[in-house]
Image 1 (tube, rainbow, N blue to C red):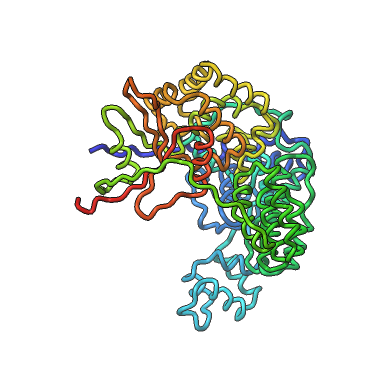
Image 2: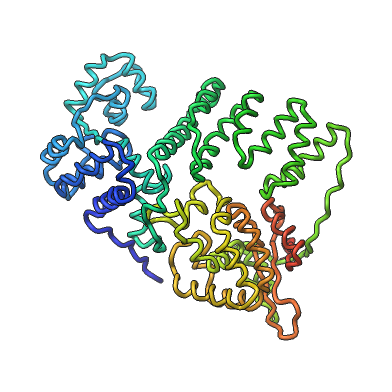
Length: 559
């Protein structure tokens, strides 16, 4: 039996080094765009002793704006009172700083609240109700005096400035210093790419403020009471700053506006929702507009918008919506719809003995024989081939694509909810040249070179564990490059949607006399059905003549 290997230990002081790296990285790129508080954070932090830096880093990154002093026990902070005094002198922290009474009470555990405030009728109350009772029955001054004397607390200054640093470093509001830890533990090894002011994410202070505003608005939308107040939602939408030509900020603006419009639609504020949806050109804006127009009885306008989508859209979900929605519109208008197209892909049925393995593994084993080898690959194979072929293009120094050393890919490809719709257009010439390699054998050399030289590095498309060299060899030898060209061109159209939904299995023919080199097989067990993204790919394969089928598996009841 193998003994589990413990994870590597992080070196003492790693958190200080990580914070220093983040602050310095932002200074190197954005010193000219930072405000007074942000510059002071950098300058004052660098004046601290090693122990004070360690404590300040923990105060700044732990959850909550204030922390109890008795919870600050660290080996590298031997003299807590002396270090806190140093932080206060540097203007980076404050003990017992005035804060809201409710926030102060939340520092205590439920038993501590009962012990020190003895609220009446407390036995069955949960902590939030207990705090409300204490606020209603005790003097606020007495509460502050009690907690400050018995549970002194500390607040780190420049927390707002630190939010700006994180935004500038990561380009978003959801990543933090844990990215450094993941890298240091060896969980992720990142590609090396160019970072400089010329290609930085933000070019003006206004752009920083806009993205901060969008992030704060998205947080506000988590308030359930706000979501039921149409007037406040409209006010929130009107407060959003209009972005300039910055492509990422334009997307952030729309990603913030769309959920507001959608909630107004749920509240049956159709006219107001329609106005907001018309400010967006990203899916599902036009889908929601078409639905609202139908609800308002504006059937001809809804129909015209659907035809506009059919003529101009390349978004698969938008086109699929129109295919479902048009028959409803036609019925409402008294028109006939075109009959649905029939399934174009082959379907097979297989009866197998059930076991503890997944239906995909069982089917792959059943379809492997002396003339065939069947592999369970799902989304990993074609994504992996795509990532290897376009590796250097994915990590090219496109403005705004890379802003820190901890990215699995460019921001316009896998930046959270961006889905990569703009990835191809921003690299069109380079991508088209690489696609042209598929017309001769140079593409295989490119794939193999990247497979060998980039082994283990993070890439949003490549899952190294699922791409052994034996599978790569089979794929390069048996899959015709014209098929890969079709698949890659479709993936480039919308990487966020087309990176999923590939068939579960690929079956290679090993017989010398066979004219079929490979086949893609989607496996469906009892009670399972095809998903929209799977149907999307099956239709693409059928149109391009790529061999693909669905295998419906049933279990042998006699087994």
